[in-house]
Structures are given as C-alpha cells and as structure tokens.
Image (cartoon, rainbow, N blue to C red; front, side, top):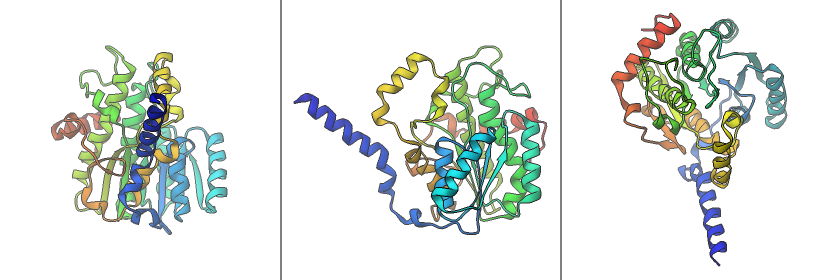
Length: 313
C-alpha cells in the first residue's frame, strides 16, 4: 500500500515539475516570430536545440552557433525537417577561444541585418580543471566571459534590431557560487562545483548590469534557471554525483521541458518591464542575495572588460 502511494506521489510531483510552465497561460505559446532573427549558442544539443526547434516552428530565422559543426549540421537538418522551416543557418563558434568569438561576430555583423533575440545558452558544467585558449578557467571563461564578449561584439546590431531581447541561461546553482575577485580563474584552489556556481552567478550579475546599461535602448535582458535537465552537461560529474542525480531522474526535466523558460523569455508579450530579472518555470524567481548585489555586478563588469581587454561603457 505504501509503495503504491509513494509511486503515486512521485508521479504527481513529476507532472508538477514538468508542467508548471503550462500553468502560466497560453498567450505566449502562440506568439509568432516571422521576420525575426534568433541567434542561439549551443543549439546543436540539449535545451539549446529544443529552443531552436520551437522558435523555428514560430517562423524565425535561426542561427545555430556551436563548436562541433558535425553535430550542428545534424541538428540543423533535424530542426528543418521537424519545423518545416528551412531558414536555419549554422555557424562555428568556440566560446573557449576569443579569436573564434571575434571571427564569428565579425561574420554575423557583416552578413545579418538584424539580431532580434540572442540566447546565450551554451555552457560547460563541473568539469575537471581546464583553461580556455586565453588562459581563463574553462567554466568562467565559457559560461561568462565568452558570452560577455559575444554580446559586446553584437550589441550594436542588437540595438538596431529593437525591440530585441538578450537571454542568459543561468542556473539555480548560482546559489552555490561567489565571485572570487582574488581568484576568478581558480588558480589558488579549484572546486568544480564552486567554479560552476561562480560562472552561473556571473550570468545573473551580467544580466542585471547589462539591463541597467541598456535602459532606453528598446533591448530587454533576462536570466533564467531552466530546471534540472537531462542533458550532456552532466558528462563531467563524478560517479557519486551521477548516481545521486540518477535517483532524482523522475523529477528532472527532459530537454524539451527544460527549454520552456528560455522560450518564454524569448517570446512572452509584455515582458520588457521585467528586464534585468531572473526567471524559473516561466515566472520571475528570487535569486540569492549575491545575485542581487548591484555593486558586485558593476565590479564584475569592470573586471570582465579588463580580462577581455575591451572598453564597454
């Protein structure tokens, strides 16, 4: 009897976890994006691909930006077939290499007339200690600095495309992070979980400061937690952590469900008044106190510019 009741409870919780976005109304689900251009990093797999698939069905021109062109090509063909939208562009982008980011942005600025929605989705999670081509700790370098530089290089095009939106995929893992200004590259000590949390906290702080700087430009900025999603990001986790996650599998989201908040932030009408905010399950959420520290956000902005050797006022 207890087994049956526990199973029923688990099933109910799973339905709640996976369908909470459906409780937010249906207006945003029918929004069209005909004539709009959407650029999504890491759209060859996971929630990035599901986001691209959905927005392609809405009529948008989708630019898939990813490191693995072979996987990107397979994803592009699948999205075209399933969406019926052939207006999909594939571009190579390695967020662990500022040279690649600059070359990519130069192509986009030259070839595209508009970027209406930029979704900074790609990321790495809890990997062994590695560095980017420029010597940054990999998680901070890819998850934060890579997208910071990409946004900087595309911001003029995005402003000209207004109304436009910039969406940064963060995580509730930001609550485990702290911006270690004296050791941003984790050279003094490295803990993969703390480094991941720092990079996701940086995503939210970047969102807040960028929204402040873009006031009056017709560009809105949002950060979000997609939920605990079954994606390839977990490949670097140690066996014990992977086992723990396997026990939680009934309560995790599929990539399709995990993409819903990204899609919501991209298309929901009237969201402009919420610029700079953090979302989860298609609704505003409360991040950690560290994620709401505007002084730290300003300092992180300045330090990020210094690290990337750019001047972004």
